[in-house]
Image (cartoon, helix red, strand yellow):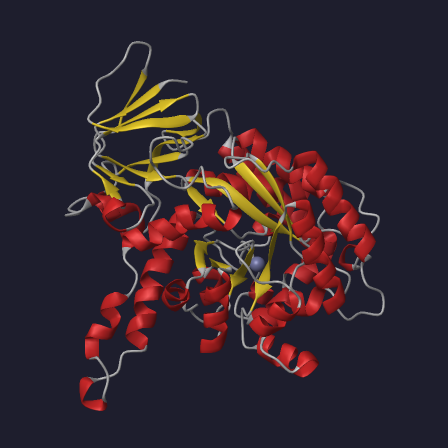
Length: 473
Ligand code: ZN
């Protein structure tokens, strides 16, 4: 489709510094790519999109999720728990009772929520695999993302060890052999992985968590396998202090140094969370160009802490934003997540401020905290960087036309803003999407996915939760 987006109030590009904004006000799309941004004259055959009173962002790139958890929101048993008791109370308890239909429905709900927030690329860390699994969950995830028109990166989780201690482990919590794990990664890569800079489908090697999911030699073998196959690596790390205790007890080192020892650092690796880091670990992550999926809402919900994102970025690490699974984040959309990232990075800087009479910099210490432009860059270009998709995540000629257009003229929340460009992030809420394009194709229009029955999906979700809880009794 040939499009001309006309008369935008503001354009944030996802780029750095003076390039973070473009005066626009128009943006041209040809065959899935942005060909021009500026004051443009309509051309014959172009469909015009009126973006008056709208702000334009790159479509968001979500770099960490567990879509199957979209039917596990707000479970009272885990609502006020920290990470490990929450894992026991909610995902480990309920996962064994999810069937194929529930898994597909959960994926559909999570992907739709993201799409309606303006997210065009989703990386899902799926660890719902077990020996003899009767359906292909990976294929379901790719199918659901494709049906919506989203870019999808499958981070193939699981492992050879189980953290769950039980005499009779339910089949769906049983670990795999390394051969089966790598064999399935190989199958998925052959079937789905596209190395192109604007790929619609990617596969990543992603044992669920390094200290718990595999033995060190297996993790090293997994990293070598991924690199030989041209695949990236992803996992969880240092979400809470418990990671330091377990790695110290078993390996007598810090979690990031453990990852170095198993070849799990580098620009082709990104970790979710990285909340609890010592200064030498931040330096090592930065020096190796390792990435983070910053998940501030889940980290807040589970009482884990606030990741030192500014220090990581200053050290050289790649910064991206992830919503994490909805079982620990009941607002798993990119606007809520980036709103939280903005506020919490600023709060973190203030938390560390020291009065001048005590030798500190006073309030000035917090002045270098995150700006809205920083957060937009992390959630777009930063995500594209950690996923290795350089043709998405920024608005510039030649880039893929992954574009979120927010209409701020229908909600009083956004009225009175001196700088409308910051509205979708700074004001929070659910800024209404006038349109979202992915690769130039319309995914969302006037706040809806054309042809999708949201009310019907809500009914299916309520029914599935009822069946899930009945099965888990
Ligand atoms: Zn996670």
